[in-house]
Image 1 (cartoon, rainbow, N blue to C red):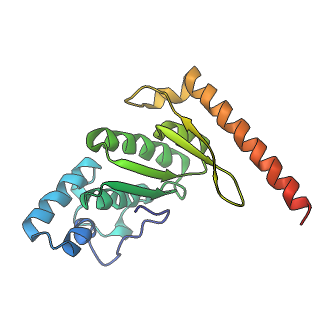
Image 2 (image 1 turned 135 degrees about the vertical axis):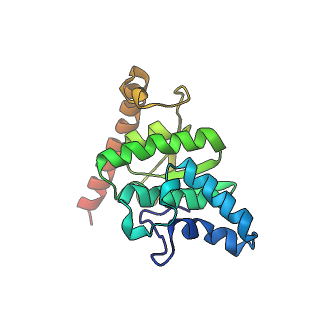
Image 3 (image 1 turned 90 degrees about the vertical axis):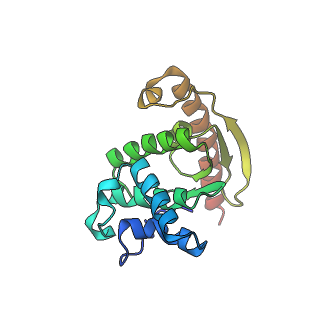
Length: 183
């Protein structure tokens, strides 16, 4: 699972943070180092393996957190607003980075976000949830070409999907505001 906060162990180097899940699984030291280095390289941080989390930027820390999850080699990645705490430029950069990583591994990712654009860009399907109680109201298939690039955000197809999702969201917000007026 990748959280909103980086959840890195501050006393461990980047490489040691990546190895922790593999240590728990009792993967031999040489093999876990090889796996960790492969994923560090995949997220573009091979040169930082001996740094500590406090020596990295927020975006770099989040890439370490993503690499740590990938190194564990799960069948399913759970990502709970992993880019929410980042500035807009870093967020967009990491979205494209996540798409590139996904293209390489094709892991199933359950990604939670409040950003309509992020949901559309990263997803094959968006599960739109209601507020109180949180239930799935609609599942929207995202039929945009892959590989996804930054240019897709400016396409007519993207704008059409965004408009449809925004209308669903507006309806839900108005319903919530009406409900709150009666409390």
